Image (cartoon, rainbow, N blue to C red; front, side, top):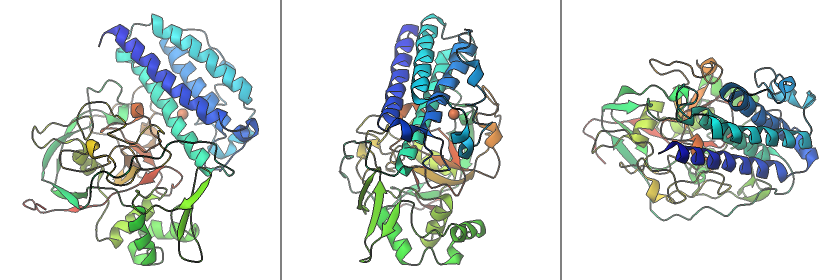
Length: 437
Ligand SMILES: [Fe+2]
């Protein structure tokens, strides 16, 4: 790719993110933009100006070396200064001020893009800082989509339903013991926590070809899954009791025993063949124990998603190195729900594991830590400060994740109690080396 092609690509990717941000912030009233729909979330107007502020910090000031636009608001929009619950009390920019601010910043950024060499420093190489900022905006767009899901009231967002099932998908794939290359040292826009590439030995394991569905989850509920302490970890059981969990978030059961869910302002019967979403790590773990299985480790998930048994090479995506498409994965808020299991045969891995990218983030059993040789870049607050035992890793992206912000190496993390994110899971188990099913 030439520098000019890269510049054009970056402009398109930045514009795609901004169109989505606009959609998410223009489909509700100014009053709703400033309201807090859940203590877990920021007011949408905070996300909007924060997106602009990060873009200003990294692209206008740092990479571009330009004068600040609004240095006075840096502190307001620093995520580390103010927890989400306290953000509505801050003297935030109004919706029209925030819109004007992000527009001004973007105009300057496009000028920086025209004049900055896209090589020569770690921040500018292959346009890394632009890629980081595009991913940041898309990540906030997914967070804002979760805020839309939490908000009450009639539907504000609309999208076509995902494609129907076109392949029968069930059972497990067995992945033989052996090493594979995990992480990346070469993907130009990979974030610090995905680096460096390193060899990992993974014992033989079996992994479900599809995520756990709503129908399977209803069986777990019906079999007393939420009332059998033996299925839960100690922390999970304590949380289940403290929060009185009885079903995924946004679900309720009517007097005839039928399960309903609220989805972006619509109430509908829970579709049985769709991957379950809005479950916490603790619920996923309890389900796995009930099923006689376990959650995959992060390394198992990545090997299932990237390892090509023919060449031994790790690919960028389950289907190969080519970019995601509408036929391969349910990404980018193209649809407002996960697709039925079997809807994306073109996105399967060589071992026949489906829907690893898109649909739902998948909880793994692994705590979020740096890979061997990890070095923070460009700042420790990006991921290093979250390393430890407080967070579990999620993989694969959801229907609300843009393709710029997910790949086979991409790592997300969250607290094990979180349910407002678009997260589900799939099952795994130990396998015998000579096992083949
Ligand atoms: Fe942020």
